[in-house]
Every structure is written in C-alpha cells, then in structure tokens.
Length: 117
Image 1 (cartoon, rainbow, N blue to C red):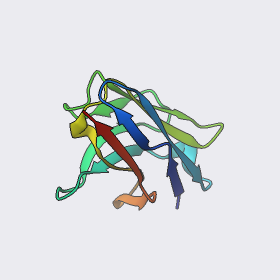
Image 2: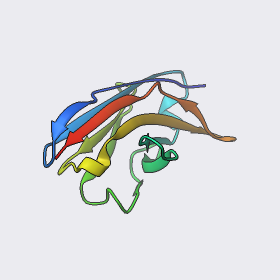
Image 3: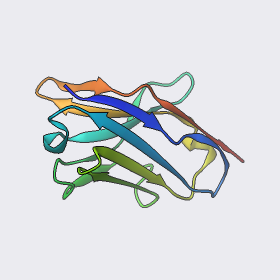
C-alpha cells in the first residue's frame, strides 16, 4: 500500500504555471504506476495523467496534452505534475493516485488549483 500526500496547489492567473508534488511512502513506490486526477465543482473526477513505474511511459488526457507534464523521482518517492499555460477550466481539486491490482486504490488528500481569467 502506498500513502500519498499532495501539495503545490494555489491561485494563479490564466497562462501561469504551477507544479504539483505528491510525496509517497511505502515500499512499493518505485514499482507502482502513478497518476493525477482532478475534480471540478459539480463534476465527476477525471483522469489527467499517468506515469509508469520506471517513468518511461506517460499518458495524458486530451484536454491537458501539450500543457501538462507528469514526472517522478523514485529516489525521492515523489511524483510531479508540471502545469503550464493554465486555463480557468483547469480549476479543480487535484489528486494523486497509485495503481494496484484492483485499480486506483490509493489516493492523496487533494490540492486545490484555482485559475482566474
């Protein structure tokens, strides 16, 4: 089991950048697929990005492709989400998550990102 703590959210203006971090604990971090999700008010939680255990493979939602970059540092047990060219529609609570055999079963507490126009 991986425990996750997300940080780095805040209030920014459209066009700005922000980097989210998610610190993890647990022996299986370096062998675990990790991801970022987000949930805007009144909407369902949606997938944002994921990264393989080695960091060699990434996936992105179409809405963030080309603007967001997911990365990880297995030595620091941390996964990052670099968000550039932010838009008001990126406003949401962002969650990091870890994959297990049963699916996305470990979740961080969420960090608020608010983008003003």
